[in-house]
Length: 396
Figure 1 (cartoon, rainbow, N blue to C red):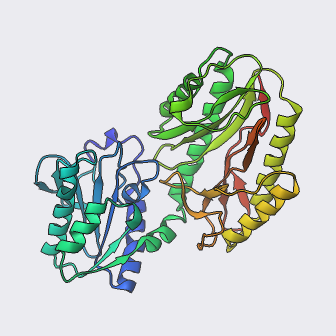
Figure 2 (figure 1 turned 45 degrees about the horizontal axis):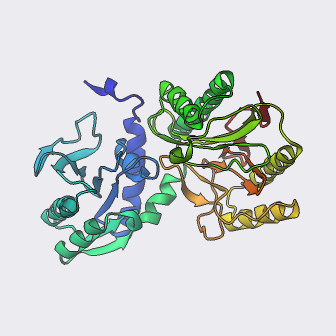
Figure 3 (figure 1 turned 90 degrees about the vertical axis):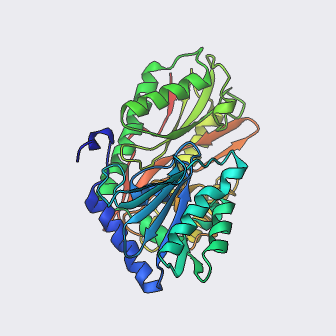
């Protein structure tokens, strides 16, 4: 289609139609007429991208109504009350019938009902009877409030789990893109290892990592790290805390969390030292590598994440490390973190064609150790290690 060359890595219509058909089958089984979702960022806003192949970004809300028996409706920022009938033929908005806009901003409180009123108007116009919220807990409050107030006579259900269970299992096309994301991050790490030197600010290192990723097709990402002298914990920190300048003898663990071409996330973490690693760092890093290997051995089709989590904590505590109380592993796709999570409260079992990030780590008053890689659960039950960067402390 004309203009499609502007999309750096478009998803095929065959893949989008596979997703839509799978969701519509489940909607029909539950008598749901339409799903409504909204995202405003890329990192943890994958529903909109999954349905439309267009990411939400920069906290601009993009609202999607997924009709069981018709093309999608999109409501997003633009001219007031503009409506275009795309008829499913716009290469930049595949599967979209009506595209509606309003000048709505999360930062401007009095506009919070604009998008919601347009979504409600569309659902009322069609006489929608049963509406499923997707990601209800993260939707803008006024979207839910206004739609439920104005679409009288409709019933509302939480359809998040319906979509999550389909979204978590990756297609062949998605797996190709996930492998590209992991290979991209390996290439980013290799480039960094040739460019790093004492005197660089932490933020210079993350900027270089981001730059190398975007040259290879990444669009969004997070880069978490902080440097410290050996004998202090160099924990993962966001961009706001990356002002320190590294010196000879310092170390850093860098976590690269960016998406690859096509928008699928992976994440890679490795540690480097300007000099020689301490025995404490080496020993702790070895525990993390062994803990990751132990967890990966438990990534079995049908396995319960709560059982994997319990075994992981047994392993950590038996090797002198604290138990994991946050998150040490999870699936990834268009969301940096998506279900299933390797936690005690996760109910979705593991399945073939899930892309799992596994990242054990721990810190003490004098040290921080961490490692992260992605692993693909294959239909034959084997697990493929997607990243190829050597699991070692890199001494520069």
